[in-house]
Image (cartoon, rainbow, N blue to C red; front, side, top):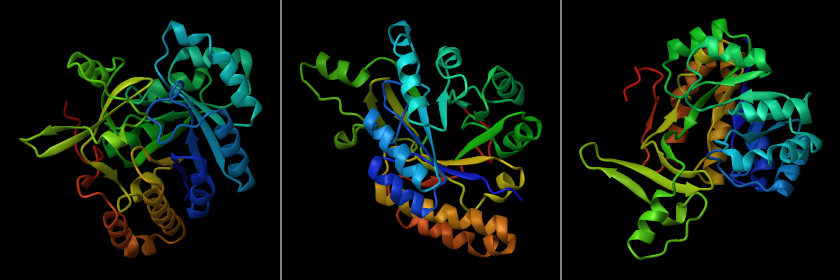
Length: 309
């Protein structure tokens, strides 16, 4: 049985060494000008340092360029791709064809991972981008487990699946919160992630709180629960999924360290001795549940239910 890559989104450069020691195989980093909903802001110097530290430990670093690019940002792509290639990134994560076309000109040998967050819902689309130059497709979070396995069975590219953390439910390019406060005659400093603001949409009927934050890419409304598949990994691993992802957005470094260690134990046990995994999976789930914020229940996302919009 193939051991999948354990991919983690760190909050800062300081996380790289710690999470590598905790069991992460790869990291997704970047800056919000080019990447969507990252766990931390990595400027160019941070990206360079992250790659150096990770490579010293035999780990990989992917750089996010999966933002929604309007005309005013297209001219910045070539320079950033050239930088990412020069500092030795292991892949660029993209959604917009503009990134792929620019990479072909500036850094034709760099690997590309296709990630649009929502439209990777069938193997035809995954293989289409594979034939255009992508080596990996990041599947939409709204797929059930049967669909994920079916896509993997027909995929010509590597498949990446998120197994832990929150997901985005809504994004607008407009700064909805900032505009609202300005309309009210008040000023609000829009900070990246907005964690200090503790802003939520509250659904009284379902008793759900949806985190809201703004960044360079607009306004983001996130899921009220966190995905947790640590006790349900067997079918994903048996299917041969190449990469499973822990999303660290709006999470602390300490939280990510505990979760990464738990998933590392789960993966190793499942691949090396499946019986051991089934013996310890409830214990591993509990180790995550013990540190889970009280307002963030754990569930299995859409893996075991149909998508409902």
